[in-house]
Amino acid sequence: MRRTVSILIPLALCCAVAGAQEGKRIALIVGNNSYAEAPLKNAVNDARLVDQALRSAGFRTILRENATKSALEEATAEFLQQLGPDDTALFFYAGHGVQIENENFLVPVDFAAASSVIQAKFRCFSMAQLLDALKNRPKRSVVVLDACRSNPVAKSQSLEAGLAQPQNAGKETYIAYSTGPGQVAADNPNGRDSYFTEALADIIGEPGLTLDEVFTKVRSRVSSETESRQVPWSISNLTGKFYFHPPSNAAAETDASLAEQWMAQARAREQRGDWSEAIRLVGQVAQKKPGGTLEAVATRKLPYLKARGDAETRYEASDFPAAAALYEEALKLDPFALDAAFQGVDAYLLSDRLPDAVRLLQEIRVRGTTASLDKADTMLKALAPAEPEAGRVLQAGVPQPPPIEQVLAGIALHTPDFEAADRFLQASPVDLSRWSKELTSALTPPAPPPAPVITPVAAPAAAPDTQVAMAIFHVEIVPAGETRDIVIRRIGAAAQSATPAPDSGFLEFAGPPGTTPILLNNQAVASALPARVPVPPGKYEVRTMQDGKVLSSQTVEVTAASVATFTLRSPQ
View 1: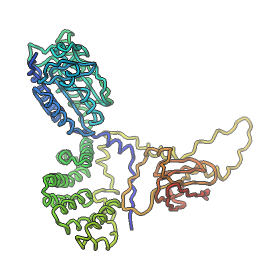
View 2: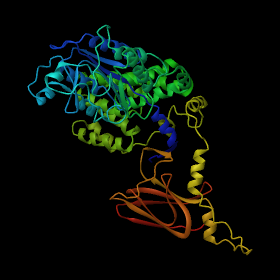
View 3: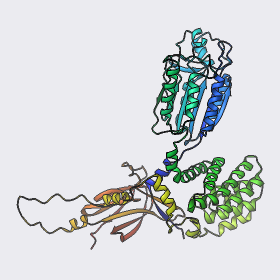
View 4: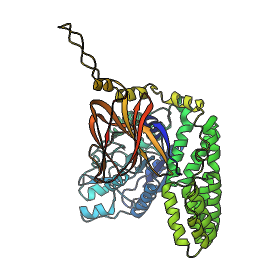
């Protein structure tokens, strides 16, 4: 017997959790002083000052001083490799920069005089390439260039001074220059740092300022200190706020749900195999001691993540026996971590321990999903000629799935977690009546037109089809058939595409004309009879429902281009 479990999760709640995810902060910081011609005095100091300010704001920093072109390229590759889709990327450069044919280039310290514009391009570092590389990689990008100093590179090539406006910035990008496009800035000969960077580092440390507010204050301070000779410039297409240091009141407001945010981030990191970051985030949850279910989950999860991280380290070092033991340890902590089980099988096979590999595959067959069971069977068939036990496991047939209570161990399905709900609602107030309103809207037919008032004629008795239309009578189509998988149904999921897939089959409904909502996977796909609903091939249960009760039920198998017809009758 196979088992299917449906769990209803409001889509808005899923989105709220996903939207709360905030990843790592990674910064690449470069300061170049040691040019053969026109060396600078402050750029390296600027880079060090920004490095200190960003580290205090929670950034992991990569600092490069007096970088050659190859050093710039290597540091950029290191920077990009660390970025994930939830992360914030910040690039800061202090040194000489130049625009060539309306494109910005940073000048490495090993730049040699060029005989042509093309040669100059290849001897510099292209900002356009960096901006292209940042597109769609992190969640947001911040690029800060203190590179508008007057320099001999531009003069020697008859190039335009200052930097050009960026032409290829991706979405969710903030770009700031120490002065306006086409303008040049002084290196502050009387100070240790440039006017711009000194102001930036100071103001980054102020709590409660958004990115825009930081650069507004920087712009005001630099303009005042230079008597308006230098006015920093910025451009942004960010759609949300970013704080170097969140305001204290905002921190207090979000403190109640901070642990939930960390746990959501940890799950995302775990799915990507970023074990060190997942361990760090879950460790923060455990240290915060939020109480209730969340603290219990963090306490259970932490040793599992550590075992997985250690196992991956040993596996990558080709220490397969140690890796296999650690995967087994992780599997004991989470018996349904199927990816850990398969990794353990691989480690045992590479250690030439076939009986242990077969034993793990047998456990996968008991606890796994349908797809995992098929994969395990394929591996057992391949092992059977060398390991007789693999053949005996296959001959025993498909094992029964574990009880649902074991599958969902640790999840209190019938016990409300009032603490977690209270923390979530404090941070993200929710209109709890929204779901019932949406369902009522989907299932309730439009109101009939108002009765005529000119002639006082009694209204005729309602016809049978009108009675059906005015009742909350509808059809539900849900997947059925042989499966070991847990199915998650989300309330309010987006409607399916109106264009059916090429291999779709069809469910056709006939009956008394009128309003009869038809729901596929809890989403309305038709509102009246007759109706034809395209569905992917597979088994489905078609149920007629009224007032929350099942009036009739029928299972049908749909194949490509097939048409299954159902005739609906009015409920008595």
